[in-house]
Amino acid sequence: MAEAKTRVTTGKVLFSYAHVFTPTAIEGGEPKYNTSVIIKKSDKANLAIVRNAIKAATDKAVKEKYAGKLPKKWKDPLRDGDEEDKGEEYEGCYFFAATSKRRPKVVDREFNEILDPEDFYSGCFGRVCLNFYAFDVAGNKGIAAGLESIMKLSDGEPLGGGGGNVREDFGGDGFDDEDDLM
Image 1 (cartoon, rainbow, N blue to C red):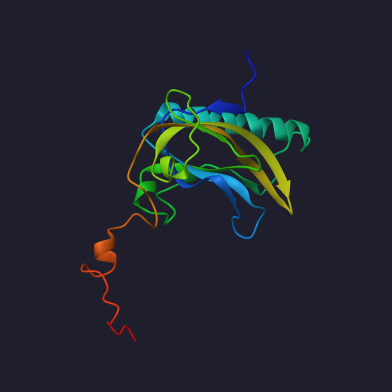
Image 2: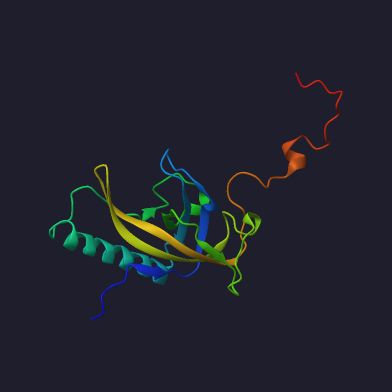
């Protein structure tokens, strides 16, 4: 039987908190390129790909680093969107964070590189290539998802701030310099 792989490519997923052009620091940590990967609970094939890679990375870590025994406090990257208050796009889904110190390649369906952040944003649908690996940092142990590359499949509803209706945001009729806002 072939060894289970830790490096996998997903089917169609939704991207949120997409910071793939400029690294950002999460909770005061080291700046990295990152995105949240969202998979519908009904997408059994996609979930199997991710779960099998997580299991392979866990099995490898237990064998190579932990003398055959899983540590008591072990963090699994796959989280339940129905159990966390992350927004309606997470409802009925599982999700995980994928990060990299190196900027991931982002391409379209024809493998043309996407360089403009306006063309890939939180809310896009696509596929992602990941490498799951074990971490052991400051007493925290578990599996993380390394972000390798992304293929954008389609646009979606932009998530998060920005992109609102500016007429609604600022009261409809513009601004008169003589208006006193104080």
